[in-house]
Figure 1: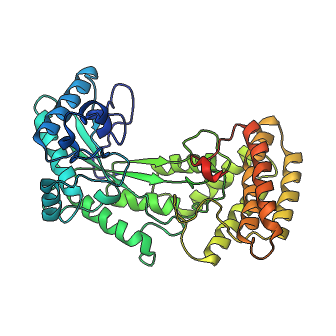
Figure 2 (figure 1 turned 135 degrees about the horizontal axis):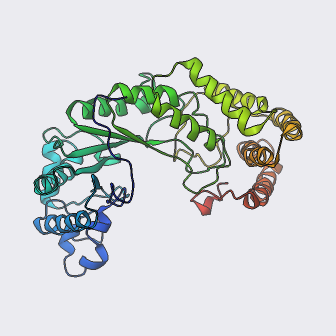
Figure 3 (figure 1 turned 180 degrees about the vertical axis):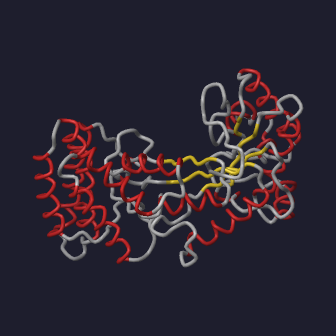
Length: 394
C-alpha cells in the first residue's frame, strides 16, 4: 500500500502510549505544578515547558517506565495535550521563532527522547502529533528515523477532496502533507469522518473518502486512524462509512466503480430490499450540499444543525419511502438499522426549522419539539447524544 514499513496497530502489547494527547499523563500538572510552576511556564496551563531540562527528565523517566511495562511495545505516544495553548517562556518562544512553527519545540523535545531510548529500544517508534498549532513543518528540525508524525486533518473540508486546489480549507493541509512526507520516515494520518458537533446529523463526505485515501497512499502514509462516532451506535451512516474506510485501507487505489459497488452492496445487505431509499438520500444529500457551496467540516463552523436543502416536501417523500422500506425489511435487524438511520432524517427536519426561524416564528417551537422527539426515539435505540450537551446537538 505504501512505500514505508507499515506500523503496528494498537494492542495491549504493541502500543503502550495512551494513544494520543499523552503529555498530561507523562508529566502530571496535579503532581508538579504547586512546587514547580516553571514546568508549565508559570501558569497552570495544559502544555508543559518543552525546553525545561527537568521536564525532559520526568517525561523520559515516564516513557522508560511504560516501555518496561510493555516489553513487546513497538509504538509509544508523546503528544501535545488537546488544548490550543503553549508554553510562553522565553526559551520556548525562541525555539518556535527559529523554527517558524510551534512544532519546533515539540519536535526537538520528541527527537531528544527518541535519541535517548534508541539504544535500549531500537525497535520502538515514538508517535507525535502535527496538530493545529503544530501542524506546519519546522524550518530546521526534522523527525528522527524512530519518530512517527501523525498529521491531523481537523481543519479540513470534507465536501471537497483533500487535494482539491480550489478548496481553501484543504490547500494549506496539502502543503503540510507534502512537506512532512518528504522528511518523515514514518507518517500517519488522523482523519475525521463525522460531524462531531452532532453525530446524528447528515454528513455529506461519502464522495471524498475514496479520493482522500488514495491521496494519502500516494504520499506514502503508513497508517490512518479514522475518528468517527466515539459514542458507539451511530444515528447517521457511520456504519457504512466504517465499512468503506476498511475497504479503502486495504485497497486505496480502488476504482470509482468498485467504490460505488461497495456502497450499494453494503446498503442492500444492511437495510434489506428497500435499500434504494438510502441510496437516493445519500445522492440527494451530496448534490444538495454541492449546490449550496461552502464547506463541510468535522467540528465548528455552526455544524450543530447543518442544513443541506431538504425542503418539507422532500422530507415527507423520504419518510413515506422509508416506511415502505421498513415494510420490506426481512428481519428485525434490518428494521433496527432503518430505525437508527431514520433519526438523521428527523434531524434534517429539525435543521429545516432551525434555519427558517426568521421566515416563520412558529418554526422555533417546531425545532425544539422536534429535538425532543428525536431524543425520545434515539435513546431507546441506543444512540447517544453528541459530546456538547449544552447545545443538545442530537
